[in-house]
Amino acid sequence: MSNSESNHGASAFRTTTRHMLKSSKEYQRKTLMGGLSGFESPIGLDRRDRINALKTGDIGFVHSWDINTSVDGPGTRMTVFLSGCPLRCQYCQNPDTWKMRDGKPVYLDAMVVKIERYKDLFEATKGGITFSGGESMMQPAFVSRVFRAAKEMGVHTCLDTSGFLNANYSDEMIDDIDLCLLDVKSGDEETYKRVTGGVLQPTIDFGQRLNRRGKKIWVRFVLVPGLTSSEENVENVARICESFGDAVEHIDVLPFHQLGRPKWHELRIPYPLEDQKGPSQALRDRVRQQFESHGFTVYV
Image (cartoon, rainbow, N blue to C red; front, side, top):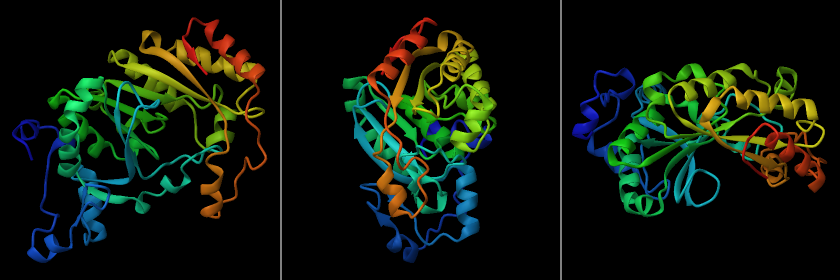
């Protein structure tokens, strides 16, 4: 644990307690170095130890990670995909991230070291670290402590989330988020329930909290013909985005595609959008114009 990290010991979510992490030579010999391409991944912890370490943020459960320059935030990003998600979106591309137990436990310290190695790259490209998923808000202590360490290094932080677990985050945690990629999956409760199995209001609440804390938002909206594409639903999404005030920098309209279907098949999960087609250019244009009529910059 760094000195800067220990200075924040008064905050419960930043307090490191390593009593549950084995320190014997035998355990160290079993520790996987590079189990996730360079991360130190502890093995051998019993269930109670893992739960305690997860609560304190000493470990996080990671599905995978990569370095990219795509849509996961500005510049070159280290995007970490966490395991665990409470929603079951019909168009989910990563159903293999739904269960936290399917991820690999990774030490907080190993994650921080990995960020340090890429610090110069992030600085040169104005990039940083992005936590995605799954649902990153399922592991608030781990994410928040990593973000705190990143901020102390001067590294940009980005949270990719549905906002569904809004209550998991304190205002202090939000303060270490530079940018939020906020998935607004629908504009009304009925459609949101059909798309995700969850409820919409927490997303709205989180976006408004981000605005009050002076944070920036890139809204993401997945356009699925016949599911999220109605004019009324899109108008409702636009009004929700308006409630986020000046926080919204732009809206990404993400056209539905079938790239996630093979994972559903591999996991033998019935895929609800088996025969669904992507949106036509005319539909994309209509939705873009709807959002633009509300004054938003839109990328389709």
